Image (tube, rainbow, N blue to C red; front, side, top):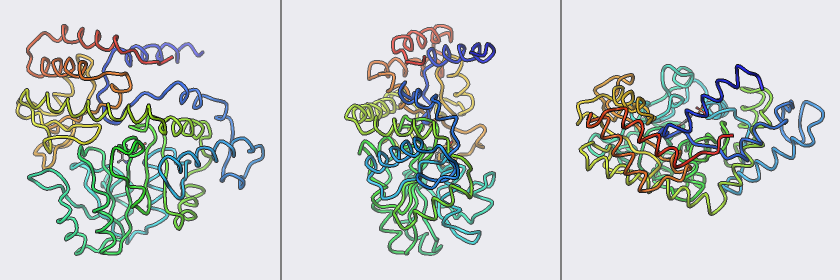
Length: 403
Ligand SMILES: *Cc1c(COP(=O)(O)O)cnc(C)c1O
């Protein structure tokens, strides 16, 4: 192995082993997934789609892509699947380019209330190329007010309503959103990047059934390789496929598509359902214990793999809390809370997710130790060195297969 590369890799292996990842969008892909992603399929050009490639020698990559597509269809009950997007952002870009033009109005939740950069932010292509009209979460409940959304949508008359978020801890009522879309005759688009593992395990209301088009990443709760997918009704198949290739991408990453196929099979097992149940129960417990210590849990609870924690009751900002926690090996990210008075780089909250620690097998006992460590460092109850050792000790008890 390249010496310089290996030196850095070894440090990262130690870092991943010794820290406790509470970032809601991270996970540990299995060895089977990583083996597929590290395979010789990386050597192959395969512009086009199975049976319609622009290169010779595609007989086996065709089989790989067909396998990935079939498994994703079975897992999510989708009519059409495109497994080629390099990432979640690319999946969204492809969908917008397939369905919208510069005049199209799309309703979405803004970044500072839990939406994603690609949902119309001005620093992103989406906000520059398309016309986004933002809906909001309710000031009191900090949740989507579907009545208000319906009224708002009736006045805006959008081409599509986009839901599915990056920092929203509650279950989304996709059936209700569908009924709104039907009433005003607009498309329903869902970006299930964060919750696709929960949807696959049927522990979250199903968006694939209701939406015209669904995009996702494959590396968050779904626990596959870093990448994206698009699921849609058959009538959009042609335009979406053309949008992915040749419009926005060139050759697909066949090694990653192979790894997606492996991950879809893993996600269709009972073991995976049990894993997702643990993810949710860990998140619920984390929220309960932190709120008992005086922190405020945004919306009061969670139904998913994440909680949003308002750290202002401790006179902290999200930035400071994130930095303090990182010092002892607890990795979270700062996050705005709804109607935040602090700018995003400072923020009043932190986002805490349980997908990664649950993959490690951590359960209620580990959660209570994590909460002690979080409170210990945020309240400066104990020397940070001592807390850092506790974190390391806990991490070592739940090794990750990283080789
Ligand atoms: C993470 C995320 C994405 C983007 O995924 P990348 O692979 O980082 O491009 C898109 N949408 C939502 C809702 C996300 O949470």
